Image (cartoon, rainbow, N blue to C red):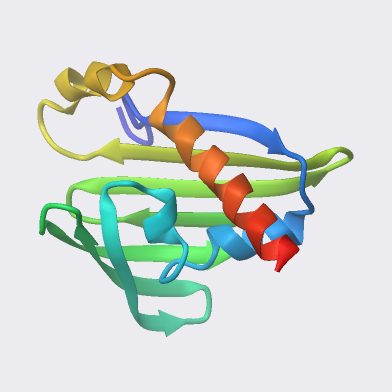
Length: 141
């Protein structure tokens, strides 16, 4: 089936902050992204051309990935050989609707997906919470 991402981690919520405050955190891939995703230690953009970029990520356990991505106001999509990820944001009357999606691109990923919820809610909900916390902290400073 083309165009379908099975068993992705997905979360969406309204953050009680302005779009510009929320997106400033989400779009700061090198500084904020490692704070948003607990399994990412570093993210370094190695090439940018307009809205397209390449980045190298290092995981908490030394794993590495090279991502190709597109970053536009309110929208980001990135993919590596084994991972897909996306974020989107839009202003709403009472704040900013923010969504996060991540998925493994490997055989057997469907078997791993149920484990992503073992410790509570969706891991994507944690990303949204951390985006809101980081945006609020930046606003206070």
